Length: 116
Image (cartoon, rainbow, N blue to C red; front, side, top):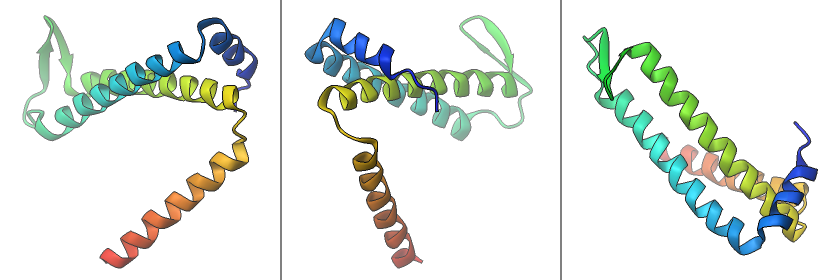
């Protein structure tokens, strides 16, 4: 993993905790919007069309899907960076986060097993 923690610490120190919590809310909204846009495209795109026009620009379906995927990746990166700032600010260890990630993943897998 890239080590940008020093820069993330500088960022939250500069802007402050309250500002970055607001930023987290904004970034989470943006990732939701980007994921909805990609999901809508995947669900409702005209499968028989070769191209589409968006904001006056012509895209192949493949190129537009890539554009949406890139946008989602950028928004995910923003959320991860702000979450990491908050994690560093509060001194929440990676191992603590990993324990919760594993626990929640196992819980989901167990639910899937029950559903099968």
